[in-house]
Amino acid sequence: PKKLSQTIRGDLDWIVMKCLEKDRTRRYETANGLARDILRYMSDEPVEATPPSIVYRTRKFLRRHRKPAIFVALLALALILGLGATTIGFVTAQRARDRAQEAQMAEESARITADEQRTRADEKAEQLRQELYISQIGRAQHLIETGGSEPVKPILAACDPQLRGWEWDRLNWLADRSERTVQVHQ
Image (cartoon, rainbow, N blue to C red; front, side, top):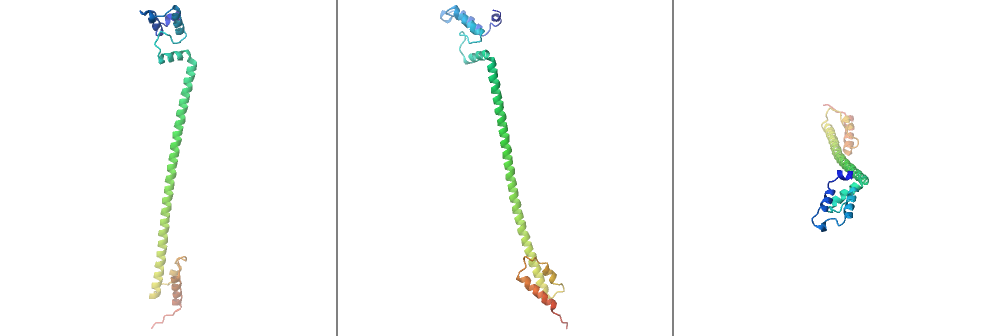
């Protein structure tokens, strides 16, 4: 009775309203029906006097089964947090993998560019080496033909041995011959 007097709210309002209903068909048929509703109210079960809504029945169920409901809610919260943390970790790992792939592609692109530049530099160096050889051969030939005072042998010795061909052999032979030739002055 003490608990009953303290909690005359909500469901009890519905029970009282059903007891005071003017239409006899809508009232409790017997005092036992009223007693069952009061006992249902006391044990946090849905009473028959209230409209049967899903929210009302769920609220009553949760009151009756408070500890298991809290456990299930905590378990669901832990699952949601775990799923969220896993998702964040997956997204972070995915982004890190994407950045690593981009860095690898940038490195590959830089390597290809460096290889191309090295190839062009090597080609340019080879071209300059050949031009120097041609210039040295031309100078040696000019000195031999004009009989200049500068010695031809050091110029021919400075020519790249890998590029020396028949022209170098011919000019070397001519240089040897011109050094042995005595110039007669008239």
